[in-house]
Length: 78
Ligand code: SF4
Image 1: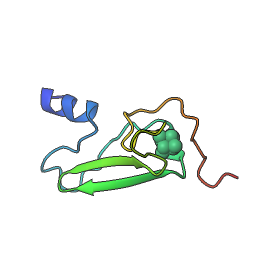
Image 2 (image 1 turned 135 degrees about the vertical axis):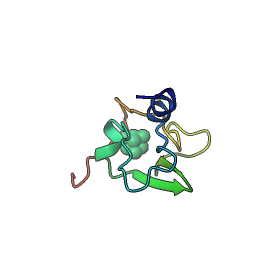
Image 3 (image 1 turned 90 degrees about the vertical axis):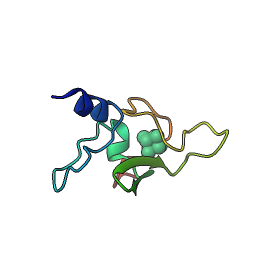
């Protein structure tokens, strides 16, 4: 793996010019959370938290992978 690919993986950025290659994002709990929103901007993909507000307890763009979160709501759960 090249240094650039390692950096992209660490920062959750897609590989530039990646074409149809899937982007691997280590999201942790967010991957299975109803509050997860995916935002794409050009060549970048971000996970946005629907609970995130300025100054609030949840980051709008959480640092991934999220391993513990009080706002976690399992997708399809009740
Ligand atoms: S509530 Fe927590 S686990 Fe769910 S999307 Fe937001 S940061 Fe991720």
